[in-house]
Image (cartoon, rainbow, N blue to C red; front, side, top):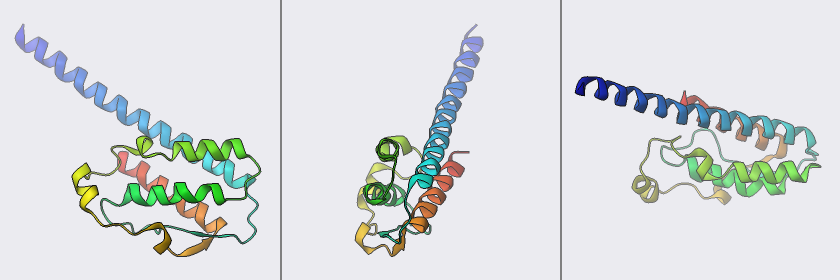
Length: 141
């Protein structure tokens, strides 16, 4: 009887762990889809934005994501409601568990400041953000 209860508990834990991973993957897919829609509504007129690179150091993913999040309002988008939604969905809560670093490790790590990233045009900015989100999704799978 005890063995049966232990097995059921173990199965339940595994299922719940996978549900969380599936939900996060679905959320990332939704954010990517919204970003692609937003990109279509952006007037890419040569505006230059600080753009984190893809060679982000370990434990600096959320910092780079925050830089992107701060710069998204600068995009000249026609769909302001969608733009606000993308900004909201780029919150660190959406990406919890994407990096393997502990809170302490992230706090002790010195990451690049937003202003130190190279300036790139809005088209390249969106492309880099999309690549970072794709990279995050690959970490979950």
